[in-house]
Image (tube, rainbow, N blue to C red):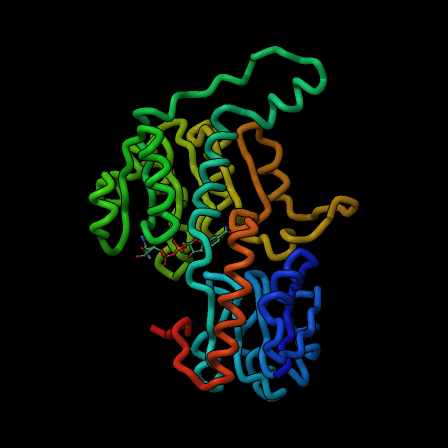
Length: 331
Ligand code: NAD
């Protein structure tokens, strides 16, 4: 069985080689994203293995089906980039990795909050240059601050636990209430109260038609002045242009992003010797109170091992015609 891994990076290969050892797969790693130009690279493959910035729309699924691809194996939790209806119509199951390490993303969320707050990134550079001035480095105690989490699934819950450990009051908004979260001390409330009372708003819900631009001009208006906004979930949860306006007026006091609406053309690539033409993204980089990481929240060795093992496990289940417990079901 041949598997073509699109968007394959050299740091992934050892984990997948190890997960595939002895299983008889023919692994074809290609660096390019799956898109209209690269889809032919899947010819002869039974399985395509995709990451978050691969394009998997109806047109591409039709071509994959014609080439004889029988399974789309996502090595991610999110599946918003796949046309599930088209896949179902072509009888191509889609499997994913629903959980690989919620701690990886939760801990990175906290790293962004702590860095923005205590400005360790700026302090590091200053001290290296012999500048020990504290001007502009003042932060705030997290203790007793209110953090509002939108989405309290695996990652939201892991984030809540850490914030509760800091002594934060944690408000939560989710479509469903989780008893364990309540026992931990999360107070479920309305989304409007999240916006009006939170010092930190952090997004941990999936990207769906309901949540697209959940952070927009109107919802930002409802937030506290100087709020810290964190998005480690999916870029299009946030209307970036509205956020830029709010940064200009200091309505948003700190912004931390690991994801960006138009990240497909930027993230996971070394563009350091190229001209970046995305003016919205470049404007974000000009603010001293904005911290952006390039979709690395998941990136721990624990998570990578789990992603590889679960992805290959999903493919083995498919080959052995077992029930696909990690199939993405079309709602
Ligand atoms: P999960 O499915 O365990 O939790 C998602 C939660 O969001 C659920 O409790 C669900 O009820 C809730 N939800 C759904 N729609 C909602 C809505 N309209 N309003 C409020 N809540 C809603 O998922 P997870 O493992 O916690 O992952 C959360 C998200 O994190 C993923 O969808 C993915 O986009 C993102 N993620 C990012 C990275 C990264 O590296 N930055 C890595 C993994 C996942």
